[in-house]
Length: 200
Image 1: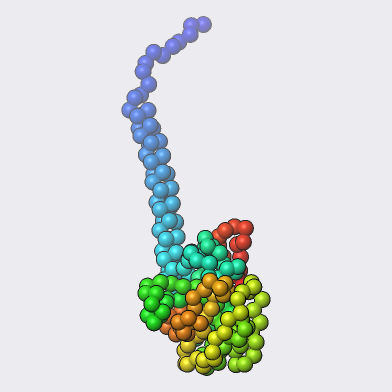
Image 2: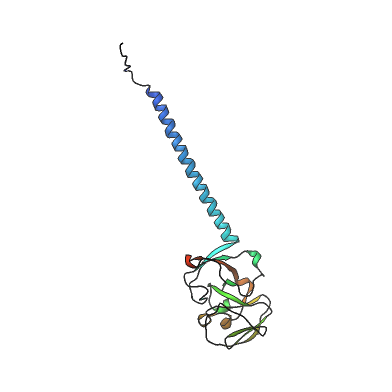
């Protein structure tokens, strides 16, 4: 039986069309992947911007005035929603723009709220008195015994102090801050990982 061999060349036009279709499909898949990843990135950026504008922002601690509660290099998440206005509580750690009267123009500071609008605050022998009653402050480390004569806070005024009393310039030195100067309160500590979590 004779073996027949066809020496004719394959249809080059058919092979070429198949190759073009394959390359075209690969290109479309890559294009779709790039578009998807780009879309996800844009959504993430927009979402982050919205959070930044209306809800949260990050802040880096650069001083020791809040030690041992906060340390230099701590990175914090700050809640600055407009709904918080007028709801600040004693003991909360807040970020605020330094009042013009403090002489620290354009600086953002972090301190703890000690006394609220309408209250009388004083310091006697290192102990904080609010409306004549000693304030429990378990977050403090040993510090010098200082005194501060009583003052009564006005409407929308807050008395703030750093936890590191010997190394903090605050309302004892410059007076109270106003509601409009408070930017937000700490939600959590994001860095370093070893102490990540809520701050009290």
